[in-house]
Length: 238
Length: 96
Image (cartoon, rainbow over all chains, first blue to last red; front, top):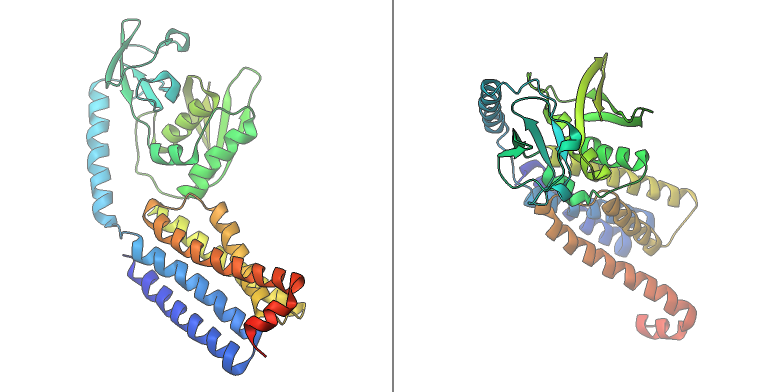
């Protein structure tokens, strides 16, 4: 329960209902009655949100994330894969029906060499090259948004924007463009949340964008590099 | 945390839009309370569509509010239609 939301919502609801009835029946002022009915409506929604939403123990969550992140990073470092280019696979190419990230363990794998459905394992082999198969973040949001194969860059931009701007609220805006050589350029302006330093190539945002690109294009997408210019972060995929 | 920010955005924009609609209707001199309420309900449904899917935790109870508001909207519209088609029925229902 979000206690502030609940209390404010309940107050608005009570004031709104009582006030609008008084204004309509006793005072006979329809404008005031309507205004208070609007207050009651907003109050009802606020009350429901406050009542139903669980309060997150933010400090504990941060500590948990740091603990998990640190250990995963150390594990990837031991496997010597921190600087490998990850390949994003759409749900149609995975047996579990979810998008995934492939990191080759020995050398950078060629995109063309992945031609079958990837089994639901963390360690998989492709043409005898051992690879790590990781799950990208925000699979629930990707699922809820119903991200499907699209035809235009604008639609891809819309999906990425909905996820990063509307749902997660971690960047100000998103722009997607394609170059003649097939490179997909994703520009993210003003990353709001100060993510702690990650030395590997697949950071949180990169993984989300890569997974959405693979889903919308319905093909393998390779992450190439990241560039930072002032407040803008530019991700390159192919 | 992001879900709370998302739902807060929905609430703030809903409240601002209802306020804007209220001011607009007052400026044009609207005196019927049911028109105000119908417009507010429409705004609510527009924002609900724009911000869906809402977090799973609140979806159930929000749909209950939606059902109540939809019922109120249907009653308002039904009265308006009845007013045109059979004004005598309205007079009978509301009394002398």
